[in-house]
Image (tube, rainbow, N blue to C red):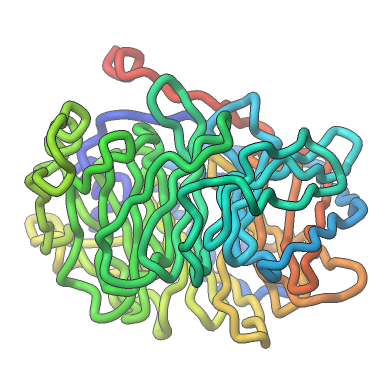
Length: 461
């Protein structure tokens, strides 16, 4: 039986490594323990999971960290006519902006700064769907200025948008970009520095459900859609390089790219299937797109219809999120269950004939408000935060789910989204009452984080 690391070497062919996003996962505790709040696996199965993760190359011993202390700061209230916050994400690409996060308020993308004194400051509104762009936004302050409704901008007339996904990127000359997509099926690209909308990517046939920037080529964006497809974009050229389609029997709800193997992509959706795609054969299209000078519609986009393998028994209900975790996978279904698992197959047998093996599992009560759960992880993906029930944020170390940090806004209010900073020093949640709550964690949950991309030359050496 091959382990996850063997699969990685066989199927996904390592090429480039990123320090700041996918460090090796934490080792499991030497003595299996049960959890009182989240449900852990049986001790014997937990021990097997430990052995499997060690066989996957995750065997380093880690000293137990000191118990973290969470401090709830004063909530930030943004009285915006777009409604309650719908999605949020920290910037994990640039060290100078690691304390910035983007938040979508239904039909607007807004930027905020987590300041050293524990407060949250409004930065600016960089794009406002259906209304004009705020071209002359004020400097960061705790009181948000009114959007400039009279200023001209490309957003005018695009009413009806409801953003559901937001992601940070890096463009040419290290420009910090923000991408957001929603029910109109279009992706808005905004320049963080100039505060202007620069591009709209269109083509997918239904609402955008998730966005993911490539970890080692952050100008490459992947977008999942309710039309059952995932598009691979070269944002600078506005070109769609590849379309992953034909496998999912319904909306695709999540997409992620491996930080160890830049040509490996995982997708999942309402059909409860997890598909892992090996794009090595088609990756030359990304390089071709970087030099493309013609019209985006003339680019020879490739339709990819055969994934490396499909796992259909990880969850029994629709899968809201699936991410790489080194050579393993972390996924969460709409019922709240979060599982760490790997793909096993026999030597000499087609990889498609393998099976999934769950190594760790925790049960989070599903939200009663009907909103699908989504977790957030630190940059090395060793600490995970998620909604537990409707009004609680639960934080876990992936290697030891017996340790749990429970955070609740005060007063209790339904939580819409959760975000972890790159090192786990801050936890944010946006709530139905329009407030953003911030917890400062001391010591940071995942301090061994470097916000830099390893050059190809260093990897090849």
